Image 1: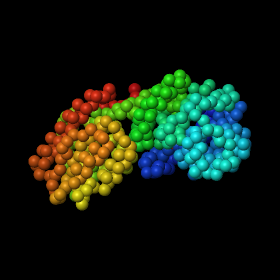
Image 2: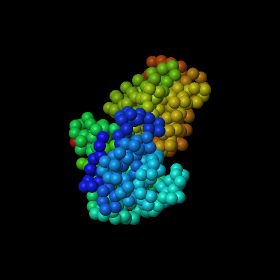
Image 3: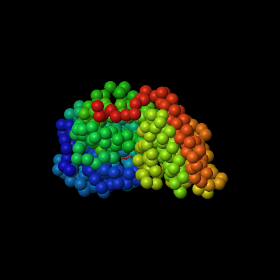
Image 4: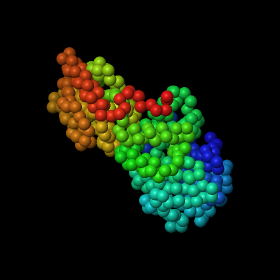
Length: 417
Ligand code: FEO
């Protein structure tokens, strides 16, 4: 893929990684992109770098636009490896006196990755500006979106926000802009990828995201394009991208229940069917995910989309099943909010999985429907009936709980209208 001019004299010089399927444990079914940008102004400025493995392509892209020896500034918005891991090699092809603009925390982090003793680094804070010629860069610190070092760069004169991880998607595609997704199916794919990224990467930071979007709006800057470091650039719908983020930061979810379970001898699996029927008979949408057959990041996304979640686990050695434990620990770290939870599972003698799950829900401070339900060895007809009623009751509680929130439809889609 060649470079693309996204605004007058501002180029996308990133790379598309068509092949990656495991992004530090996160499943990326269509790959991803590592975006970075080159501003051809009086002071030529590179914003971020690409992932180390793709640096040769990244440098070739830069060279197709300008001699790297003419680069005057490098802006590093975020120091995670996929955006800064190749900075030492970039420094070998730019002038020695190039100026790096980044936050104090990023500089401290850089010092852990590289020998920065000979680098000219200027640390910046929110509101600091650098005039590059016809454009002026305004920096906005965004700590924890995604790491403590993170910031965004607003290009005054271009109404362009370079947002690093925020508003990104792990989505490799021929398209570079959101408006190139032209039918409902592809728009749904884009929305799903945006939601997936938020759920798996940014879920813990909803409060910060709300505050940061409010701060950006208060700054009075005009944004007509958002250029993230992954996925497509929001050219047509930057406002909708922000709205989607606000909805997610406000813990919006569909009136839907996801059943996430694993099973040993299929008893827990058999419990899911009458539970699902009970949910459906209450008119609530229901998704069923067998954890061992599903990537963790897909289960996280489906959890995040749904107002209610049922976790099903057999008991193994008086404890929860290991795959479910792994999922729950992952979820704990993502600090979800405002999803109604309950648990079910089969056991042979002492039980323990359902109790373990409720202890975990409490640790996560999640609202719960109690009690959970357990079945010994195999479902009998009366167990099936109890599971069905358990599903119905849970669905009723989810419908009631959903009334607290403004979105009560079964669709979050904002793009496909
Ligand atoms: Fe794409 Fe937080 O790095």
